[in-house]
Length: 120
Image: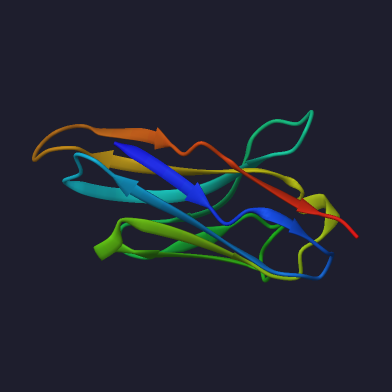
């Protein structure tokens, strides 16, 4: 199973970006999908998570500005980021809880990370 993240870049404060992360390979079922971020010198933190049933939860620091969504037909998770702030600057990683085959275990997989820089 591979996760391919895209959509990062440089944006001015107040701007928007949309991250995408597509899962591919041997996939029977995907449960939760999530976005994490890690700023330089800091620990990785959870940004937002969406369950297989579409229930979402976002970190307090991004609530009202970021929205997580998914397209189950495409095995893809998205993160719409609005009203970006300099403190949102980080490498963003996608994560998926994947069952590779029927009755198999759910395992965690990570994308390669995409840099988001918010600066004027």
